Length: 355
Image (tube, rainbow, N blue to C red; front, side, top):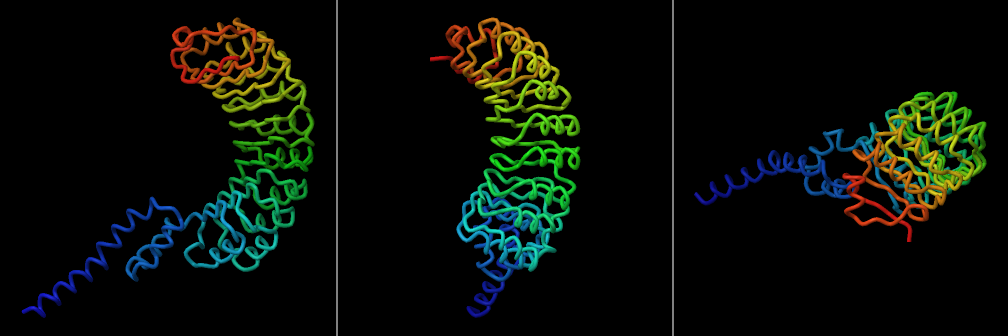
């Protein structure tokens, strides 16, 4: 009798392990980080088979800030479960070099046919050679980010646009060696671009930016942070972007009220950073207030040429949407109590005033 009960218990446990536990693990695993998901594979054969049989669990590879990430990437992509990977994150990963990306191409190139996003932010050992290798096997890439890479040049961008025709999200922030040639390539090949970050790309000029603004008219996000070389000749053409929602012009020292008044034609603008745009005055801000009535965030930090007139205009036209307003350093705007500010801007959550 005891043996029968033991056998029954063993059978029940086996059913539990074979059927119930894997189902529970599937629910839990979809919310787990990659390293924990991999650890689950080692628990028992039933869980291993269950997890491996669900492709949706293996669509992303995350090596963010990991050591030996280049070799880890090659090893992972050699596994059958990652044959349909869609997203790879190598942001600030260590030991990622051109050779690793060349190895990916030669050893497991078929694994990246469906790759949609590739994050190489902070991978400063990658050069044009690595860009050529990895992009040559990613025909469906839509998002590419290579923040703060001083080795990549116009040649790397040429490889990107030649190999990856579907890119709509492009982050070249801090790529100080790209020039207008890269912007011409981007404008001519990515006319459905949705987001572009050119922060601190210091070799660019009006010519390159104007080509972007003339051809990439679907842009919703444009980041020109810390770029002081552009002039109103280019800034005025930002008005050609009817879908623009996010615009960062921090440090645009040549932007005047004329240029800003043209930008005011971007009716869908939600976030506008004018920090240290020192040539702007009330005239330009008034134009923004009248034209951009969906604004939620506006920074006028460090602009001494704006006064309470700007604040009053923003209150008249943007009070129903504005939640964040930075006027720190705007000595022409007087300090107000929280209650006074809420009378002007009922939805205000963050307000920074000058010291």
